[in-house]
Length: 348
Image (cartoon, rainbow, N blue to C red; front, side, top):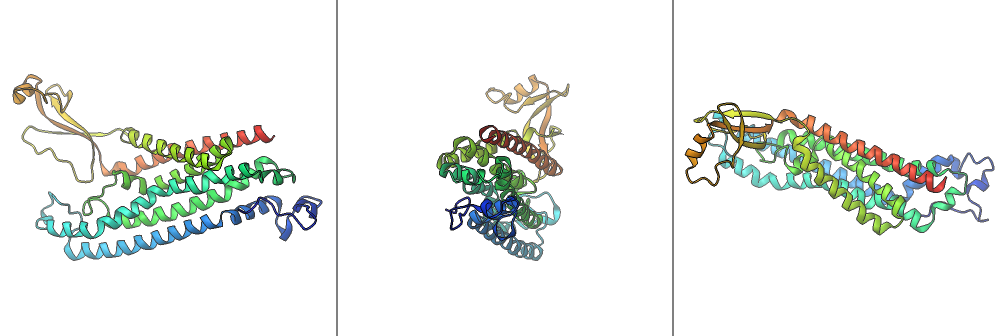
């Protein structure tokens, strides 16, 4: 592991070579030297992250090109397995063939963006500070007139910039691919767990949160392996919790269907709840007559006149994504402030 500072031949640190304390060897200032050191310490992870993003972007571009050619050749744009669009009649076999060929690659691309924040949490955020504190190498820098807050800022600034750039680039390329491959034809919709977590600002926000959780956990626990476990657990809890409240971040729309009307939403609508509505306009759950012996009689007893479906239309996708990302980024900011307060309290 690269240590926090390199000593000269006489045992003196960089500050000894520069009595003014303003520059490091090689012409780098104290803060600049720390950033340079962080880059060297984590160059392996940065390189792997860059390679993964590049491979993912190339894969998305190839998948988009091939899928677009298939859709154009078979006239599948906007068609699904069971479609109400007249021009999609007779395309079921072609849709099946498309899904057999492209669903798996699409899922792999989605999984990469879903897992990226977790990998950042484990292999960058958790060891970033915990490894320094566990080995005690941070003490050398803190004795060379580098304040603890400047040290923490230098340790986190470059990783945050790399994570922001990499995840934004990959998310943008994935969204570009999704315009062709996503939704009806592939059957992978924007509201699915993989789809929502892969599109727009969501993976970027979670990646920055992963870094913040790892840094704060490292400051508090000071043990690398323990920090990795706690960071992983915290990321899973946050992702699951926000996934549970996601449908309620924005008011749903309710569509009512008459008794003899087919109750069916567009394929890209996210169904959140459904049931029956009465003459008075009241909504009843769809289980209201589930155990009744006379099902139709039960419905008449409750004055049911039709069905309703609460849903998020596709136009709600980006508002939901930005609301959830805003919550995640606000949590990231709070954790970052707490991390600096912990650092100041412990090291002055």
